[in-house]
Image 1 (cartoon, rainbow, N blue to C red):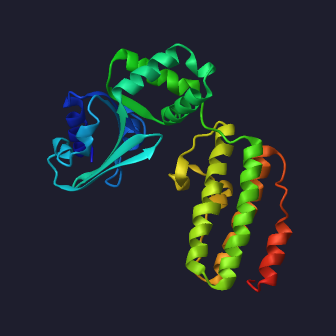
Image 2: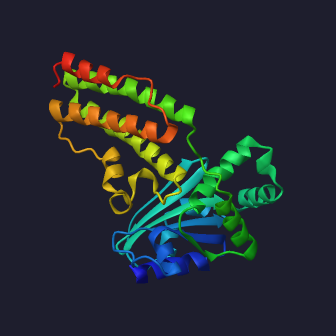
Image 3: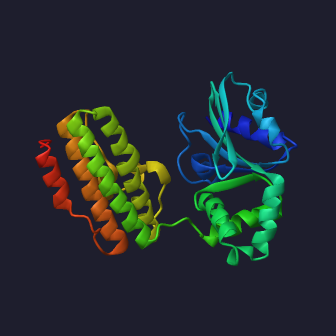
Amino acid sequence: MVDFFSEVIAGLKAANHIRVCVVFGSFARFLHGFGDQPDRYSDVDVQVITDDLPIFRDESWPKTLSSSPLLSYTHKAVFGGVNKATVIFDGGGVDVVILDHRSLLAARFLHSSGFSSISGKFRARMASFSDLMRFDYCMVKGSRKWEEFYREAGLAGSRLEITDSEAQSLSCAAFAEAINILGRIERGELIAAQRLLHLELVELNIRLLNELRERRGEYTYHRGRRAEQILPDDLRKYILVDSRCNKIELTHSTLDTMRSNRALIKEITGTLPIWNEDYLLRYACIQKLL
């Protein structure tokens, strides 16, 4: 994987239209000299600042990165108008977050001018950008000014947090969704119930757990990544669901997930959510799900 990574980075650095190239994740840790060598399942995660956005829509572009056979290429919008290219070679995968050079130059100027302190909208955009900087990264191409900008963005720590009131509101929404899921289980819509359990309830618990660890100043990943490596058992259980697609197991998983939600809200805000845990249990019993 190291040879593949070196080849990809050399291709990105050689591209004249790429002004900045930043490596994230396991390969960044490897470049910094800590962490194990990335395994064959590790994608190369990079962020580039470019003068030529259209070139990334050309399916021939990835061939400049590696001599390994190209298996697939996708280019799509992901968040905030930012595009992402995903390239799968026979030798490995590459995820490229693509940023516009002119837009980032403007952001760099506004940031240095203190614009974040007077514009909530710009502050939110910078929070999204700096959120990435809190994780391991290594700039492999870019001027000293860009290095300073990335470092300051990371130190700013203006992350996108969940307030106490937002956490309580999200928990109430999850309670309503749990009632919906139990109803679907009772009607025999097990696949729909299983989907909503993971998409709504478990996903929220992952967000809440990230928030809790952020507040504690603990290292965390979004979307449940590396949960098995970094989370102790007493926290990992909050986001762990192990159920087959049948009424009894889905019901128990729904109730357990909401108990975890309740515990997380108490840890984050200091108070329990307003919804009654016993109501869910009684509802499940009335529907003869237990």
